[in-house]
Every structure is written in structure tokens, then in C-alpha cells.
Image (cartoon, rainbow over the protein chains, first blue to last red):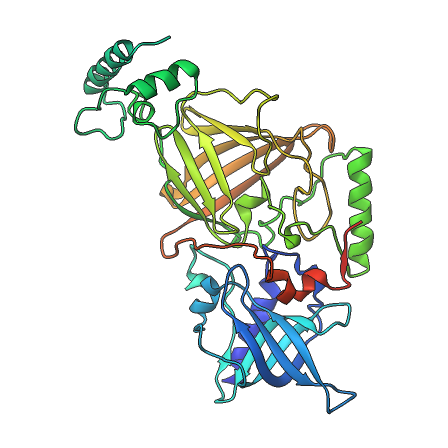
Length: 133
Length: 283
């Protein structure tokens, strides 16, 4: 099952279009960073939903780094099973992102595994076609 | 100055004409109310609103199609259909070529050059038509009102026979001033009045500015049994490129999504961190 889900992730990554609010060129689509941490804040909003995740610093384990994770709009997230209360501050999550090229703690969402094992993805923006269902 | 009696007589004549020829009026039933004095004054002054009953109720030929729907760019045939930057590019002016080359230099370095939309500047025409959210269109006899699902950007195409606003008076905007005329089975839309700053012909790639002299002519056609709207764009901007730049887009009719309220709030980019990361170049 996991293999199937990752195939879906790759399909989304390959066809991902321009983010309307900002250029996606800041992100390195060839790299993936896995963030294992705790939700600091989750904002369900237009034009982009976002999550802040506190992750232990790789170099200083006593320190937390806050990563900013950018997602698409709720219009598409709802179609992938998301809800506004699907995560909350304090939840343990594993989030995969394509990081910004500058090395700063910021990335664009690829997938997220919840503590109960559910994996969340996005849907491509293909309104008016069967792909958007 | 046209009097109320004159307008009433015209309305009565129009109603009779419609009864014979079957032309479109809105609302069609019951008979149109007589124009008010305020409408008569506005008509005489040339300022009658597109939503004034006296304007909506004028006799007009039935348009060949109605665009009222939500529409979303079709990328099924070309994953890059979001873009207007697709080659072949027009021959750029020296100033535009400099921006193009600079953006390509930074793109090669993994940086983003002058992404003004990411800083909450409007996308503007033509790009607003192909954003990540649908475009809601409502067609009335006198105008088509468009609201983009992206930042709720508003675009109005006037169909009531008015001319473009005097350049000395026009309020320049990012979507410009659009005047539409029905020609055969097409709607031909002429748009001028652009602001000319922080306005680009595309996002995420080569930077080509859209200037004050940008002039866009669109030919709207309903295709594929009304499932798709096709728009052929012909764009000129002598400050930025030579001759005509053409692009044709198709839009899918969307029946299972409505647009939502979308704003670029002051705190958005505090959390959408890529927009302020070291990848961004603004000069």
C-alpha cells in the first residue's frame, strides 16, 4: 500500500504546476527532506494552507528548529481527505518536503504521516477533469 | 439631453421589436419598467451603469453563447498550458531583453527573480486567466463579471456598447479595461488601460514585463459542445516586444467547485517562508 501511495506522490510532484501565489522555483524538486517532529501551528486557509513543525536540530539535539511547510489550497486538500482539524498543535507528524534551495528551514509539502499511520497527500489542480475527483 | 419620455418611447419600441424578432432582454418578463429620471440623467451623461435596469433591459441581439460558469485552465493536452511564456517568444525590446536575461541568469542559479505575485501584487491580465483556482464568470446582457478564485481579482468585460475610457481619466489597473463585442459566433474583447508596474506576462521562468501600452485582444469561442471555452489572445506591447504575441488557451467548465474568499493577508508571507527566503531576488 505504501508503495502505491508513494507512486501517487511522485505523480503529483512531476505534474505540479506553478503555485499561483508564488513561484515554485524556490524549491528543489529533486530533493526530499523528512521532518520528524511536532506540529507548532496549522493554518487552514487560502491561498495556501501551511504547517509549522518543530524538529530537533541535527547539530544541537537540545534545540528545536521550526520548519515552514507550504501546501496548496483547501480546495484541493479537501479532495485528498484533509480537514481543518486533521492535525493540531502538539501532534507528532512525519512530513516530507521539497526544501528551498537556500538551505533555510522551509519547504513545499510532499506528504505527511500522522501518528495513527494515516498518510496524507495533495491533489493536483485539474478542475473540470476526472483527475480532480 | 434625452428625456424620460424619449427613453420610455425607446423602451416601448424595443419591447415591440423583441416581441417580433425574439431578441434578448433581462428580465424578459414582465415588461420592462420605464427608465427612472436618474437613469435618464445617467444616459444623457454617458454614465449609465451596466447594472442599471434601463441598460439591462435595452433590446439587443441574442448573444451566440453565455459564459456563465466556473472555468479552469485545461492542462490535459499540455502540462505547461498555465504559462504564456511558451516559446517562440516575440522579439523583445532591449529593456525587456535585459529583464529576460537577468531572470534566466538567476533561474540558472536556483533563484527566483522579481516574483511580484508572491509579494501580493496582482497577477493581472493575461496571467489571471490561468491561475491555480477557477475563474467564475457571470454574463449579463451588458457585461461579463469575472471573479478569479485567486485573490478574488475582478475583471469586467463591458458589452453595452461603451467606448474605452478617455486615457486622461482611466484608472489604470492590472486587469485593464475590457470592452467586448459579439462578432458572429465569437466574443471579441479589447483590453487596454494597464498600470505597467509589478506586472509580468508570466510567473516562474523568464521575466517579460507587461507595460502601460499592453493591448490584448481576445477572441472567446465556445467549443466541445460547451464543455470548453477557448480564448485566443493577441497581445502587443511596443515597449516590451515587437509585433503580435499570440497564445490560445482552453478552459474546462467546472461544475463541482465554487470560488472562495481569498486574500493576500499581511501575515501570509510570514508563514509562506519561501517568498522571503534567500532564493528571492528583487533587483
